[in-house]
Image 1 (spheres, rainbow, N blue to C red):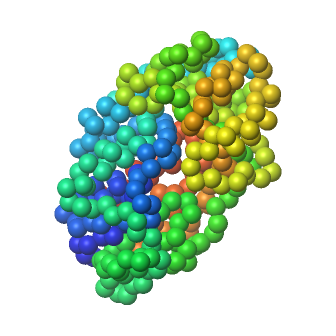
Image 2 (tube, rainbow, N blue to C red):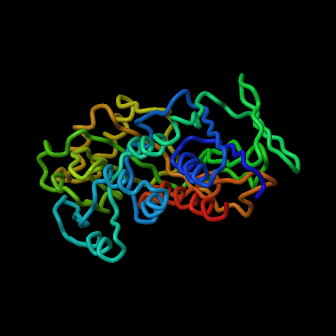
Amino acid sequence: MLGKRIGIVGAGIGGLTAANALIQKGFIVKVFDKAPKFVSTAGAGFGFSPNGQICLASLGLHQQAQGIIHPFERMIRLDSDGNMKQESHVFRQLREKVGFTIGGCVRADLVDILLAPLKEQNVVHYSHKMTNISQDANRVVLDFEGRPSEEFDIVIGADGIHTRVAEVLNIDHSPPVYSGANIFYGVLNNLDNLQHPMLNQAHSVVQGSEGGEFIVFRAGGPESTLGVWATTYSSSAAPPRRDDWDHAETNKELQVLLPTFKSTHPIHELAARSTDRLLHFGLYFRKHKKEWAKGRVCLLGDSCHATLPYAGQGANQVIEDTKGYQHQS
């Protein structure tokens, strides 16, 4: 064992899961994030898959996780008019086979579950922007902007696709790769009030590929009515990066895309109702790094193997990464 004090850069799903796993193994852990606080709307919702759920169950968080997931039973494929053309009960079959199914989860709900065991121990520290890392054979020192330095035996970089940890240590620091696709992403507080019949499908994932990849599902607990929807389109360039929801400007951009869908498609009703929570951004991935560690510092999740946002595997794989720390520690 290299040491007992571990510093984690990044208080997202990966960093918080790793903190829980390592504390259960007896390590002393501190997590740092440059944000002044957790932004509950960041990331909104995702598909929580069995690989992520199984790992949380191993941390004793099975009951809590099941309480924030809207479990999926079936998949519905739409035609270009927005009507059902195919139905599958693949998710129900998945549950029968492995005991878990994919479900819609609100990122903020998952973060709350992961934060709960850490609050009493004062593990997570916001407003800590990491500026430099130095290390020798025995320790790692983290420097922060306007904050005292911190010393650890091991440091984990869980700071996302634009990782500062990899940049500072020059760990195979290639930039993220633009995929050639962009996404509009919206959240509605209540799908039950919508008129299109394909939007009132609880415990279902509704998808379509005509006019762009389209998806809508419920996220939250088993009885949730919160809806997450998205559609992608090909492009030669990504839209300008925005730090938060900016409905006014993003809605103008969405109006340019909507005519590519037939008037009967449910995306029109979703777009009209997404009055305050709408995002538009480019889709990037990261080529898998040849190195995931340097000395006493290692990378986790999107900082070393960022994926495109399909089947929620960005979130699920970073949770699965921490399973390795739990076993190897």
